[in-house]
Structures are given as structure tokens and as C-alpha cells.
Length: 540
Image 1 (cartoon, one colour):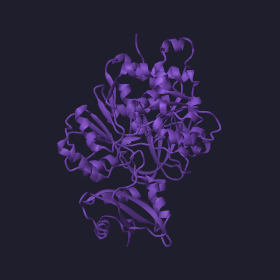
Image 2: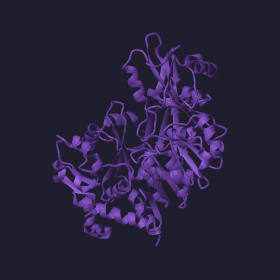
Image 3: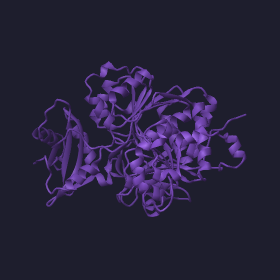
Image 4: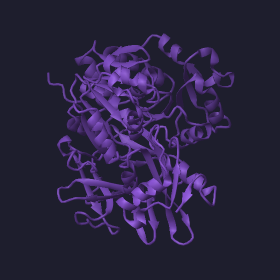
């Protein structure tokens, strides 16, 4: 009998469990989980969620750090017909309350270490939210005990098989246009916005990425990125589709331990972000680690400076480095083939398989090669819009020639060359308007990062009475390097046009980061707003 590819995300876990029942699918917290064990465990959770009242397309929030429980939760929620929402473990009570209310979630899966945050979020909530607690059951707060379940208690009850649940119509019949997840990301209004992804969106995006990376079932992926971040989440989704193994870590902060895992687990794939690269470049003893099994590294989240790409290539000459560009609103857009990396390292490549891109002007007309415009994305990877926000959805997602065909207006400035390769210039809100010029902060950062002795740089526009905005550069020097503002200014003057040269320079030990490892420019801009003149900086 022919087995067709599953149309639902969780169907791929079942498929891999049938193909490789005893193969290790997940390594986490010194535990090794086979596909069969994970499949059975997620069946059990699905039944418990149905018993708890979860119905088709109900939202379930998962507030856990990277863990086996997080992976079991997301697949158990999907099997129960629900929509999973994974949040960063560092979230605060007010933000959790907003997301619970905005999403209408009626179940929360969390750890007892998050008790204070959960109590804060649920205090005064207009409706009950059932909480499933992992961790020590004795620590469940009495105030929430009425609506609480323990993780251990869920799995201590006898589990009904999935076939029995389907026969008794206890599990809803889902189809691929049903929502699978809401991924909450920062919003321009200050409140997070939930990007709606269907099963079809997620599977389509994952297929395309697997195709250009060339993943095979022998691949072992080291995932140090938070599962609340779509880049980290899709490492699990993809691996369970092609039958690989995921080595899941809590974070990338303990770099020594992570690099040791590469050799110990025979890792073949290592997804990274610029923050991880900056940490790698600071290491003095990289030759002490064994990277012989490593086959590829990928980067997205933010484009790598060209100098960092050059250094990575020198550090890992046998490893395929794949530069990519993506947005939560469509998962992934483009990738740069390895053979082009040395020729055009500043490019983020061409559209990935089953995806189409355009660069357009303010009137929506496609610009000629070399001109700057907004990036527009078309394909089944384009998500459905923003949860409960039709106005914001209408601004970003535009209907096209026939019903159901939509394009995503990215809000990112790009240019495209004659061969179709894309070059990221910056977010619309990351462009600096000074002296009548529209300046790309990313372009300035790339140039500064090419300077010897610079590890990271973040450029923002700060208010100026005469020019409207002027440029401030925040620079992290390499270890044991004493850079001066005059040296930086001289380098900038020699390597960029005069209107791009920073007026302010501030040296920092580190740059503020989001939980996803991106440079948090909101924090840098907020600091500037609190002071009429920059502190600890030099004015030129």
C-alpha cells in the first residue's frame, strides 16, 4: 500500500515513528527519546488535553524553556486538534496575560519555576485558564490548584490509543488549512502580534528548507535556539519530517559545553545566529574542539557581516555555510548557494524553492535591478496574517489576482541584481533619514564590522535639530583590543560616504540581545530617548 506524505505537521512524527521506531529522535537533558516513545507520549498528552476540554482549533500556550516537555507539548496539542503557542521562558506576567487574553487560550502548560509569572498573569483574569504544571507538584500554588493538573499526573493515568480516540470521535478531524501555531513576535504598537500559520504553511516552508539544505535522515542537528523562535522551532519540525535527530540545548550561553556536544553527538548541522558567531570569534582555543562531523551551518535572524563570513570560512573550511533570510510572517525567503558565497558574500541569495520574490517601489511597481525597494514575497510559505488584527493583516498581506492568492509586504528594503540575487539593506524602521539621505544602518554596520578589532556593531539614528537624525554607532571591540573613537572615525571616513559617517560612537562590553539572540535596537533607542545627549559617547 502506498503511503502518501502527511498533510498535518504531527502526521510526520507518526510517519517517522513507523519508519524508525527505535531511532533516537531527541536528545535533551541527558535523556534520549526514540521516535516510538515520543509518538506514544504525545498520543497520551493529546488524550489528556481532550479530556481537559481542548477542542478543534483551541489555542494552548506552552511556557517552558527548551525541554523534552516542550516538544511533547507541541505535538500533543496538534494531535488534539489544537493550536500551539510557545513562549520564551523569560516572559513577564503582563506580557503573558496579554497573550493569553489575545489568543483566547484556555490551557497553559508551564513549569513550577514560572509560578510567580503565571500567578501575576492570571490574577484578575476574566476567565479560567487550566494549567498543566511540569516540575515538582508540591510547588503548585494553592490559589490555582482548582484549575491545575500535574504533568506526572497526566501520564500516570492509562492512555487511550489514538485509533480508539478516533473511533470514538474524541479527536477532531483536522485538515491542512487549519491553524497549527501562533508565533508571537514584536509589534510596532508595543504589543506582541500573533502570526497565524496553518499546517500547510509549516509543511511547505519546511519542505523547501530541507530541499536546499539537502537534509538526510542521518543528519543530527544541534539546536541551541529557543523553540519560541521559529528558527529554533523548525529545527525540530524539519528533523521529524526527514527522520533525523535533534540535540536540544537550553541556550547558546554556555558555548564551551555546546561545542563539546558537536563531537560527542556527532553533530552534522548547526543553526546559528550572529550572536553565536560573535561568541565563536572571541574564542582563543577553537582548535581544541572536534568539528570533523559537522557538515553545514546555517544563519538567519539577521544577515552576517561579510567579515564574519570570511572568518567563519577560515575557521571551518570543510563546513558548508548557508546564509539565509527569513521573516516570521513567511518563515523563510531566500538562501545563498555555497558556490556563490565567496563571490557575493553580502547577498542573502535567491528565493528558496516554491517561493517567489519581487522588489517594488512605493507605488507597488517592480524596480529595475540595482534599485532599492520593498521586498514582496509570494508562496505557500506566506502565513495567514495576524491573529485578531484584521487592520494590521490588511497592511502586510495583500490580495492579488484571484481569491486566496496573497503576497506579504515585508517592510524590508532590498535591492536585487541582474541575476536575481537579493541584498538586504534594512527594515523600514531601521533606515536613518539624515541630511536628506535615506541611509541603511545595516550597510554602516557591515563596514564597521570589517574593521580589525571589531566584534559587533549596532547603528541607530538619534534625533538632531539640524539634520533630523544623525548616526550613532555602538561598537563591541574584540577581546584585549583597545580601540579609540578617532581610529573608528578615521576608518569610517576612509570606507564610507561622508553622510554615512557616525556622529556618535559608544564602546560597549556587549550589545543588548532579544531572547532569540538578535541585537535589541529597541533598548538602544529607548536609552537615547531618555537623554537629550548620548552618555559615554563622543561627538564629532
